[in-house]
Image (cartoon, rainbow, N blue to C red; front, side, top):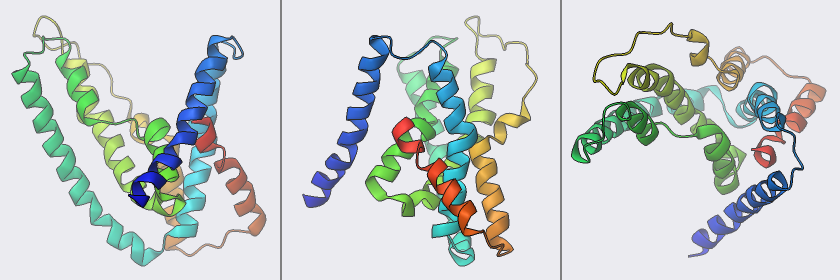
Length: 210
């Protein structure tokens, strides 16, 4: 019961901030481009910095090897979820043109703007390495099979014209930050204190802004 209460108390501040942002947006406090610029700030700067610092602080090479086994379970879970989503699409007779979107929505989560703040609020920064294992799987799933199902689905039942795949989508800045931190971790490259402090300050804005 105590754990449940603690979990609720951790989520309440996030909900309160979301409500505050919604109210301020309705009152016109933010410009039309504010949301897009804020998302770019989080995705391209703050989140990579937060991930880099967290990996260097909470992860070791031995722990990295043990965590890599988790990829098997996450890929297995995603495979089962795709199967479940396909069954639901057939069971509820979802019409053509919406099936790909429904399956993608069913399987692939909003791991950054919803999942990350909740993960940190509930489990702290120590849990970030575990979160990253899921994030890697979710990114690969979204921009491969997920995007394929959405682009190939049409109301007529015929495949849409194939569009050029953007490989950059598989390497978003947060994932690049994670991979760079792995290089520093594997080769035991020391980070100056001032650099760690700077990246920590930048990374700390992720949760409140998300």
